[in-house]
Amino acid sequence: MSAARLFSIADKVIMTAITVALIVAVPVSAVAFVVQTL
Image (cartoon, rainbow, N blue to C red; front, side, top):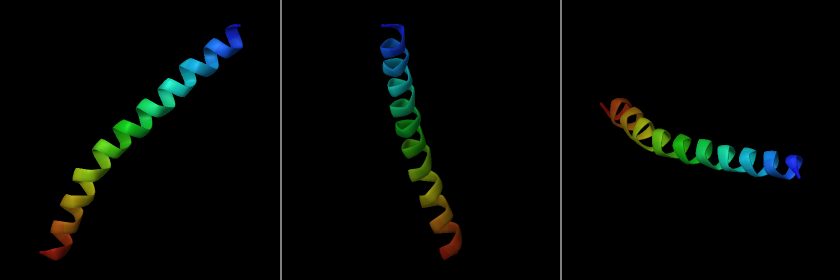
């Protein structure tokens, strides 16, 4: 029971981390691309 609960929490944390990483990576990569273009 507790193991399944921990797995569920871990899954939510991982999904949140991936989402945040994508949200952060998009503008960062865009800025890097613009800087390289300049």
